[in-house]
Length: 278
Image (cartoon, rainbow, N blue to C red; front, side):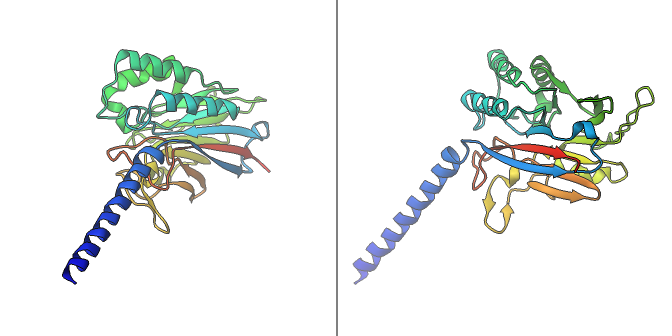
């Protein structure tokens, strides 16, 4: 009788080990690959008429070298071009703190990102993981034809003379998002943020729409609980859509991984937005 109980106990332990091993393989090698496209139709009556129908691609947090490799990057670029965006936004963390990239790696990454061809422009901000090698990040993005907006802004014109303002924020201590050029103050503003919780620091400014990353969607998602790994700077706004005061706010769950090389119920993704004013 005791031998039977021992055998049964060992069998249960063995089954549990197998289940956990399979879950690990799935979370490490399967769920970190592929690419989901999350689509949003946005209506905002403040959007100037000449921007009605604007198509935006937003991607974030590649953390190259962790679980994202050159083959993955090629697929991301190919998919972005297939979607034919007018504008592309990248909200930081191309690099990863514990991955050392060679000059040859940087050249290959630059060459691939340069292939992204929106109808208008590509904008980017840096993430916290890019700061360690900021000069390499800046060179890579600018050589790939991205407009780098770190606590700065630009006017975007499209099908008319009325522009909108694109603002890039990476430092929560520098929050002056005002813009005046030849007495122009656009009626509509889009803000790019890396650490998503920084949206709360902009309550005194008029922000019509904002996009952020950093959170990785909580990396490990549990049904009914959502993402459970809360990163500093993205503990409140983790994934999807939020209405923050009068701002339409969208947070990307990103592409790569950080620290833990796992994604659970949270495949790599990029966001596609179609913006209308009526």
